[in-house]
Image (cartoon, rainbow over all chains, first blue to last red; front, side, top):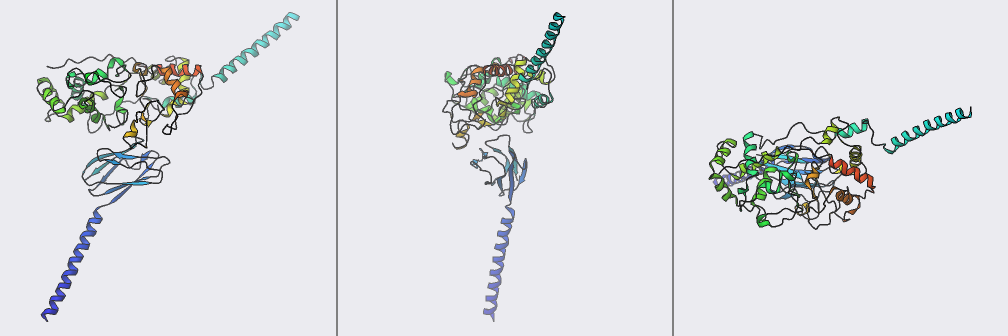
Length: 114
Length: 348
């Protein structure tokens, strides 16, 4: 009798731990969001973006011309973005970052990471 | 009777000749009218001067900051040798440049590029010929610390400034509770620089409605600038720059902005400078290799280097001599009589 109930207990405990792990992982995945920004008419679709640490920003070239997104301080350089291509930047620390197109410097957006 | 007949024929003939003459004039100057057409008014509107100087949120204007920045800009003690100030190269007497092809730095060593102006930079986006600085604040400490330029280690500079009571006071007024630190030096200099704006030029008075402000040649030049000569494709807006980067085919190996972007993008491309007060800012281009305005026109007309990185804006123009002269007349109309810049008394 005792043997049987300790096996059941172990099974229940194992399932509980597994659930906790799954919920925890889902929790982490839910926190890291992907924000999509479009490049069109030599402008970003947003001038300002507020995101959380761990989030990423996907920059899509919906324009007719090539772009090249950069932030020298972050060491970020998307390289030449042909129309239709995209580039993703992940933000692992908080702060305020100005992202510019290296080819069209008037094209810029401020990303605030909290 | 016969005399009357001949007189009448001559009269009619002279009327016809006058008619032909005037229609010929209007056809020949179809783009330029003695009085402005609606199209000309639309074009002029693109060049209207802004109402106020923009200052960024991160570094708003204050008189104390501008005054401190003015002192720092003219203070040669910001250099290792104590002989070179920002104003040594960015000299108000030469349109805030230095009238040399290439700048000079520490121990009179020659630098790699021509000294750019600081006129109208409040409206700029990125700075240096290759745009590597994202703000005036970022730019300001660069030449101060660069070994080839003012060669001043920043810690030594802070100590030197701290030893001067009037600077301690000026910093505490401009940046209460913050003291003398690199960020504040940069913020003060940047604030001063933003106040350096070209006065009204004859071109501006014409845009505002004074038909006699510039010559007909300059007016024709303005039209060419915006049409056949393709200048406005890059030299656009009231300050005559798109703040962007283009390889204009100078015979120089300098990679320009291409170096920052990994070599395949914007190779040999340099920032479009503004054109206000261009007469005072001779010589021209990133390497100072063009000695006068006509040389610039000739370069864009046909003398540019053809290569893969050449901007698609650059094409042969087929300008005739009169058109080139009109363009030069227009460029000359962009010179304002700027107020003489007083040299600040520097504290000991």
